[in-house]
Image (tube, rainbow, N blue to C red; front, side, top):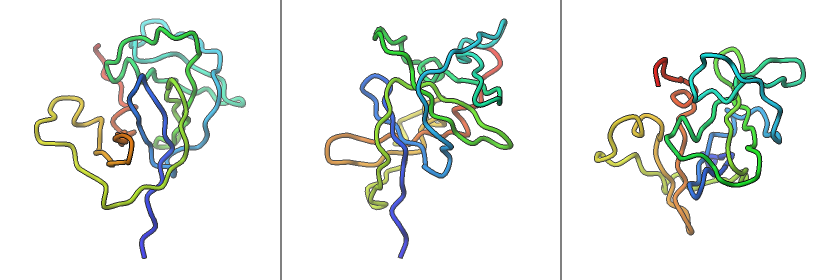
Length: 145
């Protein structure tokens, strides 16, 4: 019997996203960031994670969502990427949830452009849709933006 997929969830505005739990190293509060000159605006900065320098990607910028007008600092979802880790800056952390595999839907054919690569699919939940973030694609910041 196959176990139900599990996702670490988070919010950007009213959008509900999930990343496969096996890709997530940890979730931490806001960390002071050092801006990087000439870096893409999608790079929030660099953080010091227990002595390891980690790139923080501003998911709002990466996904084309307007800047947050809320007073709260973003949270960090630390995901494993290749040989290292990357921080995804998000508005709010959700829960770890298990989903019914039969509730999965591939992105509709009408979803085109960069969004199609960034969203692997959706899970139909009782209250809302869970957008499954393609972390491999999300951490690839285009060189010109």
